[in-house]
Image 1 (tube, helix red, strand yellow):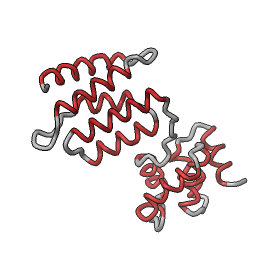
Image 2 (spheres, one colour):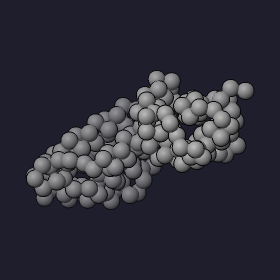
Image 3 (tube, one colour):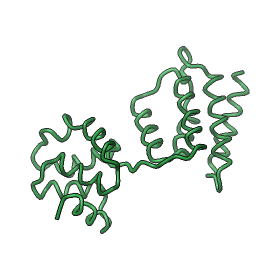
Length: 184
C-alpha cells in the first residue's frame, strides 16, 4: 500500500491530518514523505504541497527529534500545511481583494494575525477573516483608518449578500460602518 493510500484510509476512519501524519511517521517513513502523503490524501494539489512542505522542511522535517511524530504532525497542522484549499468564486475573490486593501491600510499587522488570515483565505473561511479584521484597529501612526474601514464596509456588504450569512457579519458590518463614518 502506498503512503497516500494509507493516509486516505486513516483519514477516512476519522483521524485528523496531524494524527495521520504521526501514525505514518511512526511506521518508520521519512517525515517529508509522510507529510506529502497526508497532503495528497487531502487532495491538496501537488504544486501547492511542494510549496508548503518546502516552507517548513528545514524547521520540521529535515532532522526531527526522536519520538516527535505527534508534535510534528500538530505543528504541521497548526501551520496550515494540511489546510484544504477552497476555490473561491468571483464574489469571494473580490472580498479577499478588499481584505488585502484593509491589511495594507492597517499600517502593520502581527505575524500571527497575518498567518491566521492567510489560512482563512486559503480555506475560504471569509467570515472568520472579516470578524478578525473588524475587531482590529489601524495603527495610529502608520495606518489609514478611512481606507481600512471603507474596505471593510465594502467587504461586509459583499459577505452579507451571500445566502444565509452568519448573523455576526451584520453586527460587524454595523461596527465597520460606524468606524468609517467617524474616519471620513
